[in-house]
Length: 306
Image (cartoon, rainbow, N blue to C red):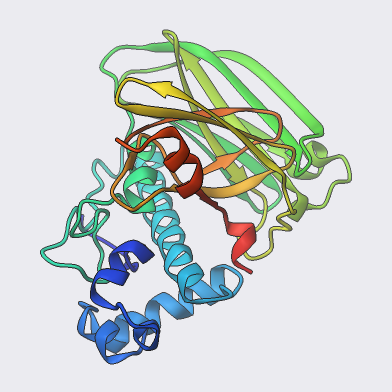
């Protein structure tokens, strides 16, 4: 009923307790004193990271990638537990926050900055979950509902390559019983890919009901095997109530886009994937002027960390 995985906080937080360039190594004295689980925990992060993803190119990239690893780990666990509804009736990850600036299992760091895990857990715990999973040569999509009434809606399964070229598409209307988990789609993967390599394709699973859209992205290989392409991310900024809204789009698939300013801002969504040709608009609360916003905005994604 309780599980977790560690990550490091973001670079802006680490700089607060490791201000010198010589401190910026996960085994430095300063970093080790801010590691709740000691050398063993560091080794777990590093070994899993190198097993699941490509090796990050520098210290800052390593901090970012450790958060994607943590977020993916918790998302994977939550979805697995929820797909097993009927056998498993709950999922509780450890932990929500920290008591000081530290590498830990927390989904928010000491300064309240949301890690990737906090953003990933939110849709994974939504009242409806659409969960695609490649199992051997079969793609299964499970729909999980925590609602207490029958759910009726439309399921759309789209398989595309990294450039956004459509490989296959299936749309169907369906009904899910209250408080239930149901396998709503199964297909042979080779028939969906039409010759495209598994490491060059993604699946977008969407379920729309009562005016709400629930979506999830699945893969046919491990993260390390994905052939993530170079991408051209385009963005524009407009005013919003407490700051700005930024709209992003890309010509190719982009994994885990992280938006950052001066480290004290809060983006309503972050560490998200960009599907080719589909724009994403995110609001951020900030008092920065428009010129400061444009100057400070940093856009990082997983392809850049190699």
